[in-house]
Image (cartoon, rainbow, N blue to C red):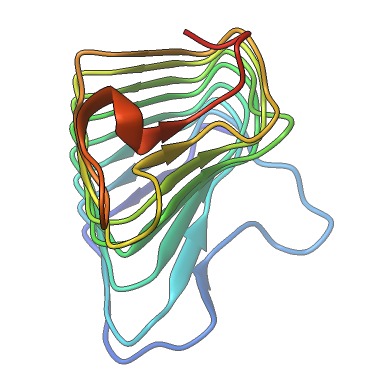
Length: 168
């Protein structure tokens, strides 16, 4: 608990570059200014701050994390009450089924944002993808998607959101 993982460079690293040890629980850490090239991913402990990292792979954040100003290939949000803001994601974003009450704001995404949970706020993002939809809300409900710049392969604006009526 309370570890600082900062200013590390892992070059041409494949696989899980920065993760908790198998079976270990790690919370309230700071992951800042780390660079991972070659496809190495990072998965962080709960209630952690993830700031200004550069990954040529996917960042996975869990419950209570704040991810801000990261440059990533992909982002997976797997726990509730996550804040992801001002990130650049050159690939897909997935908000998993346990990731309720996510705040996803001010991000620049070149890929589809797929939402598999309810009660999320997706606001003020720039989302541009070659996929069918910029935001895919699947069969979720009570998600708020507002004030975003949305472009998909063939449609843009509000029409670039796939949703059922329970979403706004």
